[in-house]
Length: 465
Image (cartoon, rainbow, N blue to C red; front, side, top):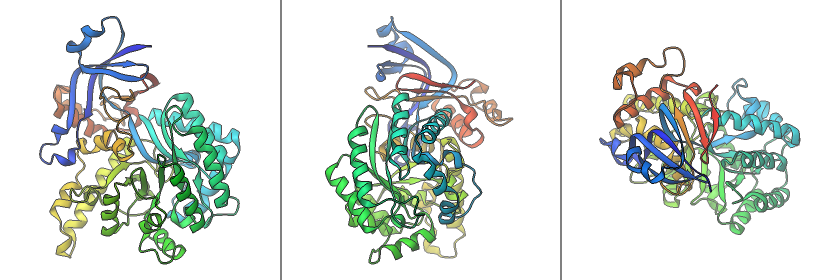
């Protein structure tokens, strides 16, 4: 067994900051000079350097200085085969899929194209500080295979699965429910719970899934109850209307998935922009999750996710944040936090400016505010909780997998370090509040250049050149 140590300034979470209104720092853990001890990829000790170093006198220690070390970022909703279509001229969701996405994703049926795309995909993730993803592939099994194979080579935690679609897409892209079921069974047997791979039964969205395809998804879930379910829900008004037409008799979008027994723990619906209050309540009761994808929602004009509604303590919904790359215009979860903060601010302006007094909900407005604590919890421990993998990743607790990122608060666009002169006299953070203020500056002013190092399973996987 190999045991190593990482010394530096650490920041992670022990609780949900939305539960600590007025005292959010109580949810965080800050160790200004800490030691993380890793044995074969697993954390076996963590705490102040001076308190535990004598217990590990013979190990090699890497000292990461003048950085804030956080758990690796978790992207709860991303599209692997859209890597090379990133930045395609914007349309709204449905025409954008037809014009750009389906033709590009179809190319991932060619193994060499998918293999090269997987290398690009993971290179970009690591350079952005992302160590865990829940990802869509395409309707071609080869695409799913190459994602899992490259993830295995890099020892990264990945949740993914063959993407099912059998209607409302070009003939060259759709597949039959029977093929989807058979291919999914093969892929589950080959990859689920093998290494750090986890499998998600993945109907692309209800608009693209016939009742027959969703029944095959239900059959897969019954046969593999420990598998995840990953899909889209209520992203775009035209899509929502299309689902109503494609699945007549369904009360709403969520009801389509409920009919087939797919909604429960380990279910994630991406976007969730146009959910009704009833759908939020039912997601809460089912202990299911949604993913907030602000950059994509803005780029495709889909709408404004209600952060304050999703975090209502009376009917809290588990939540991850996601890039939705390539609908989202960055791989960076830091960019996602920037977008999420702005969406929350706009939501509050809409609440305050509404002519309907019943919509002026001061409690929801307070929950829309995305502090550094709420933000970084959402892409670390909160994201892990949303995916039901918080027993494995998301914090520096002993027994978890050692995925983390070292952030440089002075890097980004020209002048990105301006805020450091206001904090800790321009030096390293001294208090948890110093660290939070620096992290807020990183998420608002910084970009991928703030990611100095990314470590996966206790080994450095990326170092900025």
